Structure formats: structure tokens, C-alpha cells
Length: 564
Image (cartoon, rainbow, N blue to C red; front, side, top):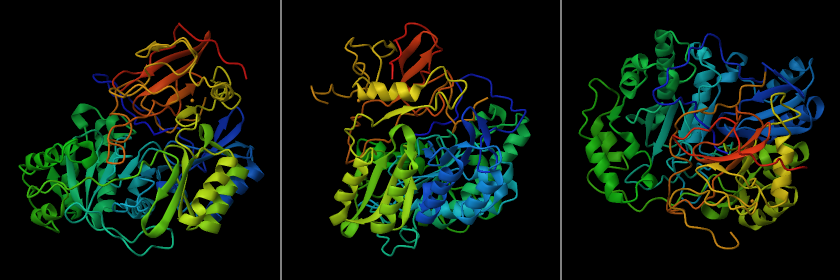
């Protein structure tokens, strides 16, 4: 499931944070009902096979023999004993998973998981993620960031830009809109460093700053430092950009001043929500018109090292010509085989309910080592991408992974079904929601019958009808204290769900995600629109949550809990 931004309802007062966040880390373990929990940050979700084996060994020797995938592409170990802290730290340090112990909880960098892999490769923002991580780990001021603060790096397809980053970079294609041919690959399975430019955004500010590609990581860190100054000035102890009060809100213009002082060039782009991703615009002429409106905004004075004319000439939305045929990006949230250039393939699989056994994890690592590039990428949809396979072996390996219990087909009844930890791992959960969800999916009824909110029940025990995005056609007859969660919005509005339409998927045709929660916290719930299956004292209450329509408190009517 996609991650959810930490937003607050319109008109509500910003929270006053009188303490630091309680997000667990690799060194700060959380005491849960099933033992201690460790959250290992994996910037951009990147793992080498050696690092994957280190995590498997830690779970095997110290934990419960499983690994949980989070909505930010990180990994969690559960069931850890009281005295394991130093041994776990040593394992992670030896594997290169703790480059800086003082920074380990702030390495929250989410990047497009298919960047550089599909056939129409966009600029590879994942290299920006690696450089941003290096800058973070050498920054003294960055240690003041909250463990909830999130950097989002989108490769232009729009898959992660709407997922609530505090600081976001959206890559723009080089030249006249055609993707760059990156050619040679690095030792980590990444294409060579991209050029081009990026749009930098902060929070929900619709304006953006166009930054030269090589400067993008430094600009993102500068924006985070600007947030720290704003948070200190507000006196609220804000953890995230959206928590800043109105008088201290962080905007693109405010970040521009910091960039100017740091010697980072930029171009101000007004109303960047119109031009972030070409696939978000139904008609290419609208893109050109949006850029023409944005170009009326003058370039901020004194912004070296390059001119606005150079930026405009290389921008994909130049006023001299409309954007060409949109790039057919692959759907990074769906399981299956990703077709790349020159016959190279990548495998994308999902973990049922976001959890893998050590055996499943090691199988994925073995495929990456034997047939891939020796790396794995964890995704915000609680999945794993294995790049670098040949076309000859990809299909056979995907079948092998399916046989091991992984989700490999978009039509799987497990696709888009999620659940919180539930009992016995979470003391606040009312029931074992994972067992209940498993029983429901196995029985072919992933949503209980009773539905409240904007959905209506069919009375058949099947998924409520309609539980779809607006405008989606009807399917045919054969269409399934706790740790601080990776941040969700809680009550309040959010941006539109999921990635925008694109050439491979002109109009989204997905059923809404279904998420089972053991209490009102709804830890780890999806972003945007989703089906809320909430455990109450009287059973499960089901409703449909849509942007600007927050989850309702627990109330009747309720559906009986499935028995497992």
C-alpha cells in the first residue's frame, strides 16, 4: 500500500509537539507485545544481496523469522529479545546498513522503484537518492529532523510524488521530452547519472523550484534545513512541513531564499501542480498552456549558476512546442514482469499483507544474485523489485516466486489487501486482524458485508459495490504503547489517490485498496481512497475513505468478524 502523508484537517490547529517523535529505528527499539521491534531505514528501498542476507540472518537469529515491509520501502524486524541491541547493531553495521548511527532514523528517502528499469526509462532519480543520503549522513543540522520527515524523489511517472513528501523532487525528462538513454550501468544496478532538471516542492505548496539535476540532492537538503528553521521559529516543535502553523508555513519562495544563499540555481515555477507530471494532464495542449502560465513568473534575481533560458530550453513543458506523446511508463505498484531495454527484465512481486518469511526473503535474494544485478528494491506498496534478469529466465523465476507464496499477478485476490499488525503483536488491537483478513480473502470475501460511508453493500459477502474510483466502469462477472507507524494522515484531507493516468493506463481501473485495522489508529493504512475495515467492540465496521473524507470513528453498524 502506498504511504500516507501526515496531514491535518483543513481549518484545524497545528499540533504542538512537546517531545521528539517515537518512531523506532535500528538502534532505538520499540517494545511491542511480541517482543522488541526494529525499523531499518533503506533509502530508496535499495539493498544489495549481502545486505538482504544480513537482515535475514538478524531475523533468523534474533527475531521471529519474518521481515515486515513498510509503506516507505523500509524493513522491520519483530520478536527481538531485550538484550539484542548491540548484536543487531553489529550485524547491520557490518552490512553497511548503518552508515551513521546519529542519522539512522532520518534516512527517510522514498524513490520511484522502477526508475531506470522499464523500457521508456525516465531520469534515474535513484542516484539522486544515494547522493541525498550521503549528504544527510554528513549533515550536523539534519540530525534535528524527525524520524517522520520524508523526502520523495519521483522519476516523472507520478507514482510517488503524491505520497505526501515533506520535500519532493520530480525529475523532468531531458531534451524535448524524450527520456534520456542512460547507457552504462553502475555496480548497483543503476543507470549512469542523469542530467536534466527537477522540480522541487515542499509540503502542499503548488509552486515549485526548477533545479538542475546535479544540484537536486543538495537543494533537497537545503529545503529540509529551511524547514528546521521554520519549525524552530514557530515554537510548535513541528515534525513535518504540513504541521507548521500558517504564520510559519514553508513555501517554495521561502526555500528559494535559502537556495540563493547556498549558491544553488533555480527557476520559480508557479502552480507546479499543473506541470509536475505530463500523465496528469489529459490533453498535451493543456501542458503547454500550464507552462506558458508558469513562465509568466519572473526568475528570482541572483540565482546562479545557470540562466532561466537554459532551463526553459531543456524543460519538457517548453512554451515553444507542446509535450510530445506521453512516455508509456510501467505501473510500479503492480506485480509482474517489467520490460526494459535490450531484452532486460525486472520482476516485481508483493508480500501478502506486507510480511515475508525468511525463506521467502532468501529466495528473492537468491534470484537477484543468480539471475539479476545482485540488488533488490523495496517499494512503498510493500513489494520487492529484482532488476537485471534476462527475458529467458524472467517468466520461470516469476512462477517460482508465485509458488513460494508471493503475489505475482495483478489479478491475485491478495493484491491491494493490507492489514495492520494486529494481535498478538500489538496490544492495542482488538483482534488478530491478519488472521481475519487471511480467512476472508481465502473465502473470497475480502470485505465484510456491512458497509457504511460512501460505499453500499451488495449483501452477497463480496467486495462492496461500488467500491471504485469515480468514473470507473463496473466490472464484468469475473473481474479479492504501540510503535509510531510509518506516518499516515490520521483524520484529514489528502491528495488524490495513486499515480495519475498514463499511456499504459490512461484511466485507472483498480479497485480501491482494502485495509484491515485492529483499532482507530489504522496504522499503515493506504494513501488516498481506500476501504476501511475497522475492528470494533461489536465486530468489523466497513466504510469507504476518500480524500477530504476522513475515517469515521468506530460505530455501528458492524459486520461479524470472520473466524479463522
